[in-house]
Image (cartoon, rainbow, N blue to C red; front, side, top):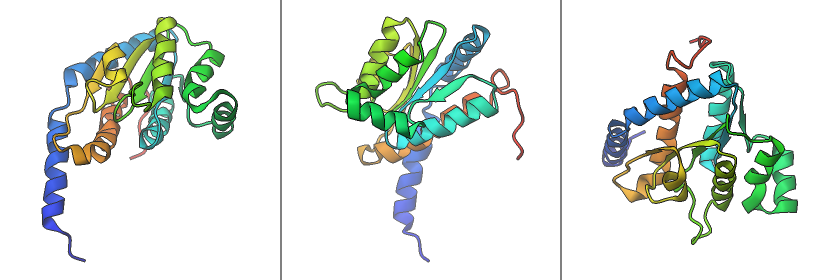
Length: 198
């Protein structure tokens, strides 16, 4: 099967540039913050919707299995997620879950999102409300997003903003690079406690 070389080159070039532009000083700050969370017996709560929710689920597995960290992905419990959507509204699902978890100042919210939420546009309002609640509880917030003016980027303690030069590729590339970033964090010897099989 022939591959359209122009398409491959176009996608690869923009992906590679985004990876080259990752701010690894901020990644290092995230690693230091997570080591502090671990020391204080805090928890990590992964929050995302759509493709980012799938990334959160995978990251949660890695942080629990490879790093022995007490972490949760808020979209993994389908029954609770849909019950809260039905009863409390989609915009409140994450904040209501965090209340049940008794979120506190020793915990960390790890947001993965393309836009990071926009109240005016009504996009990812559930992420916005989770961040608002986390701030009330004096909980640390980190985010990996592709919009520097999105709610998560503006209101996080540490925000890693991905630079995708071609806006038509912002979702596929940023969701792909989210994975590279959490793998770089969980693979750091300051975080990782257990070896991978391969």
